[in-house]
Amino acid sequence: MTSKIKVDNINKVSDDSNIIKKCGTTTTIGSGASNPIVVDGSAITLGRCGGTVALASGATQSGFGRTGTVDWQTTPKTGDFTGANGEGYFINTTSGTITMTLPSASAGDIISIQDYNNTFDSNSFTIQAPSGVKINGGTAAGRLALSTEGQGLTLIYVDATVGWRSIESTTFNTQSSTPTFITATGGTITTVCTNFKVHTFTGPGTFTVCSVGNPIGSNTVDYMVVAGGAAGGGAAGYGGTGAGAGGAGGYRESPGTASGGYSVSPLGASPAVALPVTATGFPITVGAAGSVGPNCSKGGDGSNSVFSTITSTGGGGGGGAVAPNNAGRPGGSGGGSSCAPGLPNVGAGNTPPVSPPQGNPGGVYPGTSFGSGGGGATTAGFGEPKVGGTGATSSINGTPTARAGGGGGGGGGSGQPGPAGPNTGGAGGSGGGGAGGNPSGGGTPGTTNTGGGGGGGPVADGRGGGNGGSGIVIVRYKFQ
Image (cartoon, rainbow, N blue to C red; front, top):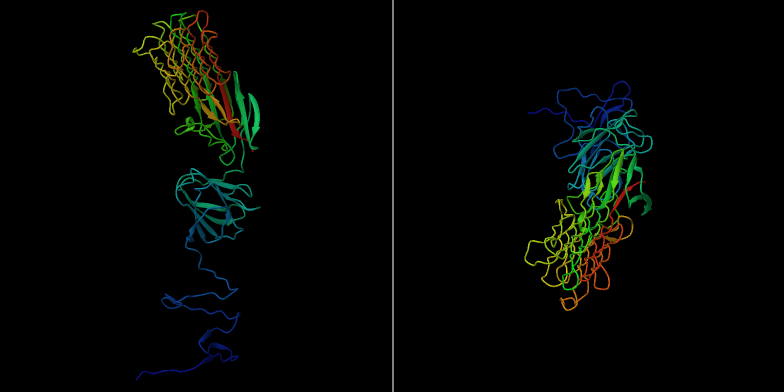
């Protein structure tokens, strides 16, 4: 037979206070706040399997500590928020940058974050300390900027000296400062879209970086570098053939990621990137226009434009009306050809080759009395109807502007009609390309500071091709 002791209460002898008290469904162990309960044993189990052990409202725990883990919130954060102790967050920066403000904290508080879908490299994530609180021992109210694809980070609050300390991260263990920005001089400086500076160089100069910012502010620049356009070729007199047009100067442009907020041309596509800068002077070369020569000669090439590691090649001169000068010359964009159909007389573009391509070839001589158009930044020149290749349009300076159009081919002579008319010169490509000449006037020059190609000379004595248009260099960055 099993022995049993049945009681509802166990009381102390000294003052008759409860040690164990049963009241309804509740059993209370202990006799007040001033009387601790000590359970001594190698293994103590509180609660039952599947049950919950809870601290009373207002009670505090000690000795348990944290295991270094957080409670992960599985709904990704898509906007700015304030973190909470003991929580982990998945951060989705697909639509833009996000900032998490850290909470005021006590020693041992913990927060974790994780790049939700590998987008930190496209849109960064910023961790902002509140007023008076440090990150990794830096200045109060400092920041961390996370911009590495797939990055995760855990921070634990240590004390007032160090503040929140990053303990698990692939790359970040130091604090970034508050945003700082590039300051620079050189060229004609304008302010666009409130926060961006634009330096425009229409001639030689120096882009001098006085100070470099940081990734939170700015430390890279966007650019557009257009070389000088080439001149159109010289034509023969009556009874001869119109000359080829000058090719546009090479056109190179960054994708706009450094200073944002504007439309770029297709030539700003990958693998083009914004340029990092240092506190130094960057000499600027603005390519000169190509000049025309005598009748029947090739047009002169444009000159290169240079900024930092970016070189755009001058346009290739248009072909003259008589062999062996009939072939268009290679360049940033190639010159249009003239005379001698069937010969390999196309002026190649994107020479030397870069990616994205800086220009296109000139047009192929169509076997009629007029010359072909010069290549442009985004399309090749045309043999028929002898128009210049199309330039590229960018609003890097705040206004959508086309540049680097090819020149139009020179017109045919009287009695030698072509598909576009007997005497009419071809139109220049959008972006400063000059029109081809006709018997009453020579080829039109390319527009200054667009890198446009000059028009080809017409079939007419003393009516030559047009000079090219000079180049331009524009640099843009965030300054506040």
